[in-house]
Image (tube, rainbow over all chains, first blue to last red; front, side, top):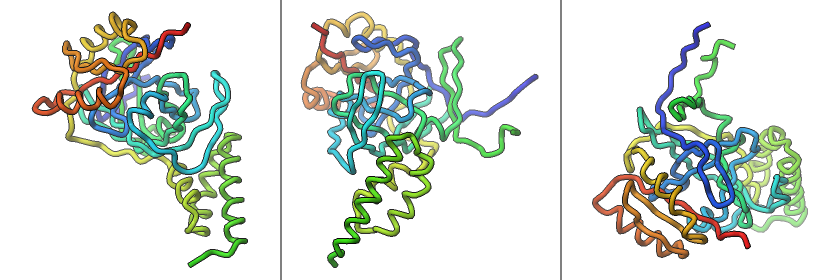
Length: 147
Length: 132
């Protein structure tokens, strides 16, 4: 069987990126909310939401907005709020992609920044090539898979 | 115009209902209801906010801003030295360390100064404090 898919761009991810006590198995860099600097995030398809780490929330100076939401996680139960912030994937090869993603902002979150499913990974085409540590991305094209 | 109290109560119930759906992982249901609730109680900032954050994400090709570059040198430095700076924000640009400081305001100031005249991407890292 031969499959062929098109991607808009690709960036290099980092395997086993250490952040304090955490090891980000697949760490994807991106600009979150600001073009000033980029940061590594943990690619986690099992996470329901993207989660903004406490330090990044401080760096972005995000005021609380909307209503409080509770999140059950492997670190326990946390409270935060949902916010819409762009994630810009900066291509090393090809073109960039910007996702207007939804993040759970948790001021007390002890873990790393997480790229989760809802409000982010669910809406664009992506793939990884572990051999090159490449993360490919593109907008979805409905019906393109032939399913 | 001031809304009648019953309208406020209903809007608050709608907010609580959406939050309950989100917390119980019924996000598709919340997504289906949120636009209707937001239209029905247009004065409720919480419902407008929930409708916005529950919208499926929009995806756009983007250009401009700092160019993509390899972060290998930044990461090599961070792997070797970040743990020497617990509780600090660290900004790097290739071989160059732009800032190391516990104050994010100070680091942002140095990042802004470093970006002037050099469009290459700056990587921001935070090294959590060591556990006792």
